[in-house]
Structures are given as structure tokens and as C-alpha cells.
Length: 95
Length: 222
Image (cartoon, rainbow over all chains, first blue to last red; front, side, top):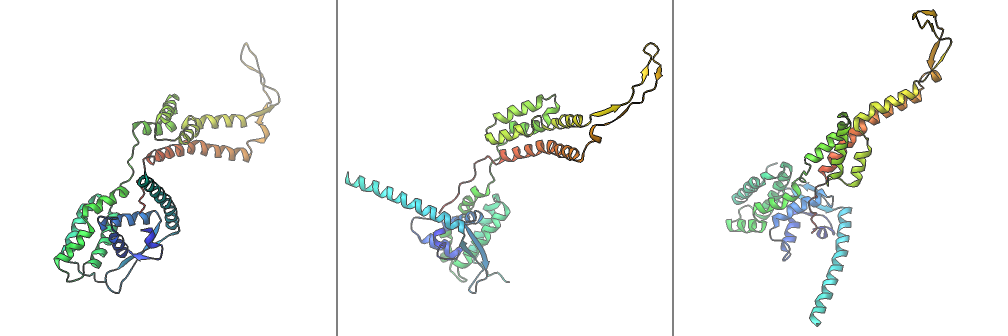
């Protein structure tokens, strides 16, 4: 979710749909709203409601400095984790 | 502003979500409902068929699942403070009035509880030993040191056998140093405040620390 916001603000429906479309990540899109709420309360994202010309008001989210720092930390951990798993898989394949 | 009308199935979904979300704090439920309502307005266009609406609702998932996902964050940490912790919090400031034994019992309870860290226990022990009972003793001792008097002149002479005054005395006494100085008074007031507020603040601190010692909800990282 934070990664999707890195390039700029997005409104919640758009965010939730983008994650829902990613295969294997989410079983029900509705459960992403509590997650968004948690990220908001933890100061990782900020939100504002804005009127929309085409429909109901939209809640826009943008990443904060804390959110960006958390994302960078996660990206670094993830890279190490992925390398370790890849290495083990290769070892298993050659054994 | 007129709210756009929702598909009847979307309306029904919101009703079910409102019912399932009764376990949530009202502000959390309100927040969720407004987000989900915006989602439904966006995802189900006016005039959509029931099949189209159902497809969207399936993507959204059952209302109960959304409430369950919100629950871990909504539930306040379980308050694990028991009789031991409350007794310690009460006995540390007030137990000294029971011949000092109450404070010692409070101290034992404090150090035997797992809800406080060593730092908390040290604060509870050192601020202030004896609790509120220490204040009168400490202030009395301080007042004693500053109320020394100097006397001069002749003492009254009394006949030991009859008890009558032979010669009236001319002795005059006055406080040493010309009475308590302003600095001494300020020190006394400061200490009085510290000795009274210290044990109270320490007890409040311990009560709050014990409440917050419960494990915090897991942080979501997606």
C-alpha cells in the first residue's frame, strides 16, 4: 500500500482496487480499509476527503515521511529475504 | 449536497456492515462505513444489474471479515491489572498510616508483580519511601532544625521547698538567626509539595504503567 503511494497520492477506491487486482495478495478488498485506517493512525499516510466531479466524495491518501522511511526499511529487508530464499532454492535444485 | 442513491444491494450491504460493526468503537465504525459507502458508490454505477452489484460485493468480502480485520486495532489493550497491582498502588502512598507495615506490604507487592519493569519498581520504591506518611516527619525534622532559639538574661529563681518565686527572671528568647529566613520557608514549602505530590504522582504513574504493559496490537505492514 505504501509502495503504491510512493509515486503520489491516490484515492482509497483506486488504491484498494489496485491491490485487489494483484494476484494472491488480497482475498477481500474490504479488509484493506482497516489496514488503511491503521496506517493513517500510525502516521504512515495522511488523507483528505475531496469532492469528485464524477461521483461521490473521494478520500485521497498520500505517504508521509514516516511512511516513506518504513517503506525503505521494508524494501531493504525484503531484498535480503528474497536473496536468501533464492539462494536456498538454487542450492536445493543443484543438490 | 444530495448523496447519490446506492444500489439496493449496496444499501443492504451497508446495513449488514453497520450491524456487524456494533462491536467497534463508534468513530471506527463511522470511518469504515463512509469508506465502504464511497467504494460502493464508485464500484456500482447507478442502474447496474443485481449480478454486477453482487460481483462487486463479492470482491469487497463479507461485512464480518471487514469488522474482524478492524477489531485487533480497535480493541484496547487488555487491562491485566489485578488485585496485587491495585493493592500496591494504594498501599505505597497510604499504607504507611497503618504503622508503616502497609507501605512494606505495598513494596513487596510492587516487586512481585510482573507488570512493572525494574525502572518502574525503583520509581515506586524511591518516590517516596513511606508514602505520604513521610511528609509530616520530614517537615517536622526540618522545622526542628530551623526553630532553634537563643536566650539571654537571668532565669527565674524558685524556692525548691515552697515553690515560690524568689526573683523573677529577665530571660528573653528569640529565634536563632532572627527567625526563619525566606530561603528556609521556600525550601519547606517546596519539600512539602514534593513529599505530598511525590507519592501521589508515583502511584498514578505505576497504575498507568501497569495498564500499558499489555502487549500492543500487531502492526500491519503491507
